[in-house]
Amino acid sequence: MDALKLNSDVDFNKLLEAVKQLSPMELLTLNDAIWNEAIEIPAEHQALVLNRVAKSERDSSRILDWEKVSKNL
Image (cartoon, rainbow, N blue to C red; front, side, top):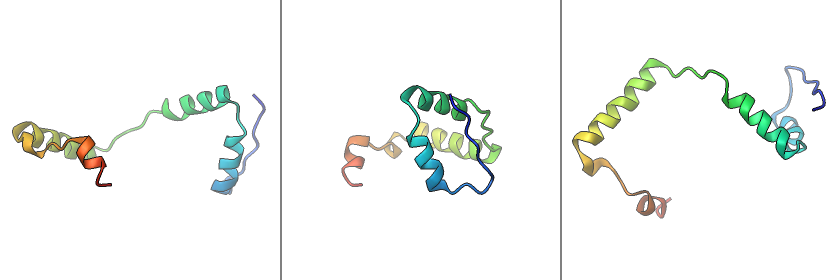
């Protein structure tokens, strides 16, 4: 893979154009590099999700059918 020289003021659209020029294998490698980074989810976000899961477990009427809901989007 060829080296990419970037400075900190890279315009998003220029970056996107550069990414579009990557081969499928390079895109997969880039995807792996991005998603393999350790992403730390803040404790308050974790608590919010766990709270919503617990509410849904107590009251199954809160759970909506995706096929029905997606038709309204």
